[in-house]
Length: 220
Ligand code: DX5
Ligand code: ZN
Image (cartoon, rainbow, N blue to C red):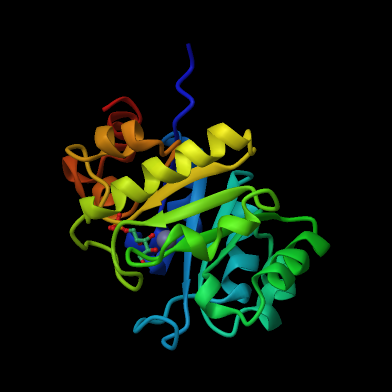
């Protein structure tokens, strides 16, 4: 039976000087999604890429662009990311004055909607929107940088969300993001994640053998 686990490599750990080739290599290595971390140096203390870069890397792969917006304010940029080729647009509820409005805005551009919870953010922040979105991104590190240590204290929150989604029969994916490696991926899946984001493990382990690392994360 095909594994229902999806792997979404984060390009934050890739070589930005050859982003297009890196994305092509990820697709060839079996990535299900491409996780694009957008940071504005305001919502998080780091700066990465914007919609123009996404537009330029879009032609390098047909894979789903799983765009994680760590920016605030967020509403005024949704259209640009949608037009640049994002397929899933995930935002942080702390980055908007009105979560329902941001969801509607992403829907207006016919994109899938994700909401992200930082490690200390509670389910109550998003409970009322679970019937309106496609994905919850559970951060297992404080957003801002790759290569941080996994925070297992987020697993009970993931289990709780899984229980709610199953009970209410919501059609919502659970994505975990931050510090995922071969040692903790099993507990992340057992807690309910069906999409694993990984940057440093995929790009750095086994001398950067992307296919081996993606396969290992999917199977471990
Ligand atoms: C952190 C980002 C994560 C991060 C994952 O703010 O949202 O996607 O790049 O990278 P690793 O797997 O190295 O923690
Ligand atoms: Zn991310």
